[in-house]
Image 1 (tube, rainbow, N blue to C red):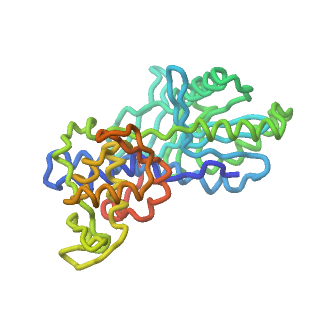
Image 2: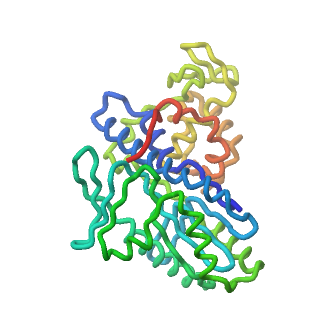
Length: 342
């Protein structure tokens, strides 16, 4: 059962939002687009695992996509986590082009693409770290520890070579077509249930409650100032950041489009670029609202959580608002293009 459905990564959404609000002439614009390309390629790799996992018995397995957990002194994010009464499995997706060589001495991973060799992060070590931290999280939260396996998963078009004797790589690196075979093998290894169905359901709820999606500060990453971010409400028809609020609606001076809720994608952009906290003044500034009373009314209608009771009151935009209204945002269609493998 897909208990935590795969949604487009916050990192992808944040980069799309930033790319849509930084001038294409800006020196950092190419870097933003390249980061967006890489993140979308990674997301496409994760999505490719959805089909084989859908073939599993929905009564036996819980599937968590993009699960992020925070421990006492660490955090971990899992591309795909499979949970059952008998065992659990981490799948770390790698959507890499070219030939990937796992070398034992020295221990390293080299990707060969267009005749050029490039060192890459080692999925074997990444999976080991994920397993270690997940077991720590279970221990810190006094949860029963299940047998835990982990695999780095590559697309079928990637050519993989593993040095003879590099047993860790031989055991934990696989192609996407072999996921179901691996799970069937694990079913023969782990035949004794560790959890009752009731305990499994409880663990599922604990994991979902502990899931904490992280929003990265890309302004800091690219050393951008707030003034370099273009503000305003984007027209849903022509894409111009110039809609004006009058007569209780948003009006585009370019294509004459009229909308009641065109400001929603802009609030999503604000969240993705600046974070969940927004003041009355920032709300007014970002949406180009000239009237304080209109800004107050609009902000109140959104029913965000208020922090403070004076003029310095801050409103917290909830993550649920972003996920519920993402379809209204067109940033991705404006900039995503075709993003294949890394």
